[in-house]
Image (cartoon, rainbow, N blue to C red):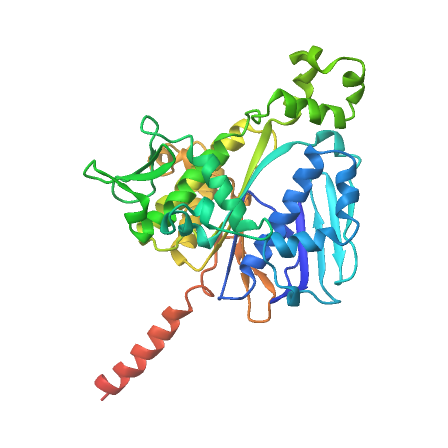
Length: 409
C-alpha cells in the first residue's frame, strides 16, 4: 500500500504515516490543513503518474532547480509561508519514493526497481471547492485567466473534456432526491428539471451547480479505466521515439510505422486506475443528497476497480456529519458481509453496488495542534464523529442549563 507523511507544512504539524486506502476521508476545522494535505498528496500521485507514463528525464527534471516545490506552490496555490526548514514530505508510492526536506533543497525521487515493470497509467482529477465557477461565471474557459497553469485552470479544462460525453441522448442523473439530469448541447451546460424542462446551469440552484461537476467528472473519470487514451498517431510516434523502444522508429520511415509497432505504447497508456480528490462534496447540498452523492461515487469507484488492474481511490475532505455517517453505514455493510457472507437476510439490506471491504475506508481528524488522529475503530467498526459534531455537545449542555433554571425545584 502506498503511504504519505507530511510534517510542518502550513497548519499541518504531523500527519503520521497515512496509508492510501480506496476511500480516504479527512475532516477538521476551517484552515486546519485538509486541503493542504490533499493537494500535496494529489501532486505526489500526479508526479508518480508522470514518471510512469513518461521517460527517463522526468525524474531528473523534478529533482533539479527546485522544480518539485515550485510547481507544487504554483499549481496548487500553496503559500510560500507554509514551508520552513523543518518541512518534510515523505511519499512511498507504487513505483517511486519522493522525499523533500526544508525550503532550499531539491526533492529526491527514486524508482523502486522491484516494482518498476508494473508501472501503469492512472486518470487523476482534483475537484476543488470552487467548482461552482463553471456555472456561476459565463464562458469561464475564456474568462478565467491565470499567469501560470493552476489547479482551477486545470479543473476547468478537465470539465470541458468530461462533459462532452453527456449530450441529449446520454444524460446523466444527478445525485439529488428529485429527478434532475445533466447534459450539454453544443458546449452549453443544461439541467433537465423534474418537470422535463431544461434550463442552463447558470440559472440552476447552488446545490445543482455544486453537485453537477462531481457527478459528471466522477462518472467520466472512473469510466475511462480500462480504456486507451485518445492519442493521435503523431502523438504516439513522438512518445515512441522518446521511449525505450525508439530503435523501432530509427529503423523505419515515420510513414511506415504500423499499428503493430504502436500497440505496446497504446497498451502502456491504457488507464488502469482512477483517482479523485474532492473538496467538500457536501457543499450546498441537502443531507439526503449528500448521502446519494457519496453512494454514487462509491458505485463508480467499484466499477473502475472491477476493470482496472491497479487500485482506484477517492480522497474526500469534509465538514459534514452526513458524509461520515454514510461511510459508517458502508462500513457496517462490509463488516456484516465479512462476518456472515452466506446470510440471506443481508441481501435484503446490503447494496452490492456500494459494498466495499472494511479495510477499504480510512479517516482522519486534524486536531487543534495540526496532528492527524486516526478516527477509525476496527472493533466496531466505524468512524468516530465526536470531533465533527461538537455542536451537539454544546446544544445538550446549553439546553440542560436552561432546563435546570426553568424546571428545577
